[in-house]
Image 1 (cartoon, helix red, strand yellow):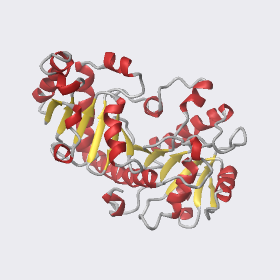
Image 2 (cartoon, one colour; image 1 turned 30 degrees about the vertical axis):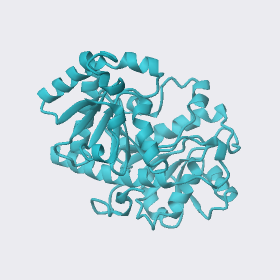
Image 3 (cartoon, rainbow, N blue to C red; image 1 turned 90 degrees about the vertical axis):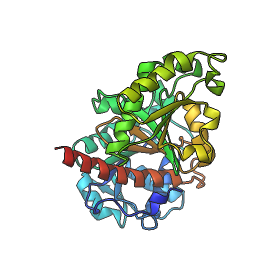
Image 4 (spheres, rainbow, N blue to C red; image 1 turned 120 degrees about the vertical axis):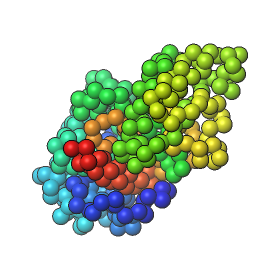
Length: 351
C-alpha cells in the first residue's frame, strides 16, 4: 500500500470534504466505503461524504455486519461535523431496491445523477475533490448512457475543452493511457503523433501543477515488439511515435522513447521515469495490476477538478459477501486529498 497513506495532509485540514459518487449499488463500492470509514483514523483520512440513498446505505451496512452509522446531510458543509461519528450521506433515493450482485438498469439514472451531483459540489467549491466508486457500464448503456466511461462523462460535466488522460498509480509506478476503452484493433488505428503529443502535454502539466514534479521525466512506450526493430516488425515507431517524441523535445519536455513495453516495467527501468505513456489499455494496466492488484488509484488528468477512483470494478461476483478489499479506495481518498491541496495551491499562486 502507498507510503503516502501514512503521510499527513500537505496543508492544514481545513479544506472542503471529498464528495463520493455511489457507483453501481449492487457492487462492492459501498462495502469498500464502509471499511474505509472504519479505517479513517488508522489512515488519517480526510472527511468525505457519499451522494447516495441514505436508507439503502444503512441497510447495506447492517447486511454486511459493519458498524457504520449513517447520517443524512442536506449540504456538504455538514460533513465535517458528522464524519467523526457517522458516514455522511447526501440523500439521493434509488428508483428500485437492490440485490447484491444484480445490477438493475432502473437505477442507472440515479447512478449518473450521483456522479453529476458529486461533480457539481467540486465545481461549486463545496467539495475539494471527487472520488468515484465503480460503475457497471453495460447496465448504464441499457439506459442510454452514451459515454465510453467515467472519464469522458466527467469531462462533459466539467465542460472541459482540454485533453483528458487516464492515469493509474501505484507506489513506484505511474502510467498514462493514450487510448482507453476501445478494442485493441481500434486503439491501434487511433494512435497518431498528435494524440501522443497532446496526451503527454496534459500529463506533463499535471505532473508539475498537481504532483509537484517540476521537470517530470516521461517515457513513451513502443507499440510493436522490440519497438519495431527498425521497421522489421512495424512502422509505427518510425512514422508515428518517434516524431511525437521529437516534437515534445522541441517544446522542452523531458521525454524519451519509444521503449519496448516488455522492458519498461522492471525495477531499474521504473526508476528512470516519473510516468510512462502507454498506447493502449492493457499495456499500462497489466504492470500496474501485476505489481499491486489491490492498491492502484485511477486519476483523471486534464479536468478543472481533482478526480480519483479505486482501480477496480464493481466485482458483482463478490458483492454482499464481506470480502472486498478497501485498499484501493483508501489510497484514492488519500491521493485525492494530496492532489487537491496541491491543485488549490497552484491556482492561488496563479491568480
